Amino acid sequence: MNLGIGGVFYVLGALLNIQLLKMMPYTIVYPLTSITYIWTLILSSLFLSEKMNRRKWFGILLVITGAFFLTM
Image (cartoon, rainbow, N blue to C red):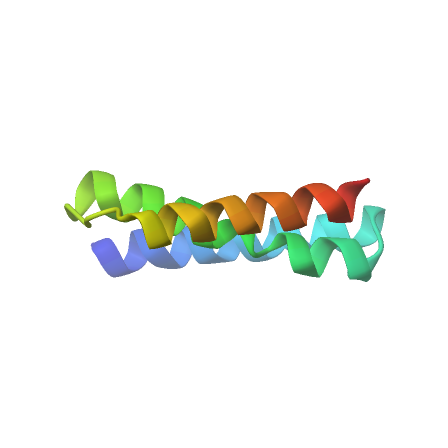
């Protein structure tokens, strides 16, 4: 069951990525996929009781800063 749900989310993400690549340049879309690390940390802390420390928060801040500069 969980594997099927994961597969559906993977396919949806791939299709969305393809649509974005049709609308925006690859040099912007691909680096912005680093935002998935933020979602992974947030969801793992909510559902898997992953501990968030300063290093992880600093990493999230770096990813957000980099994504911001890419979109300027």
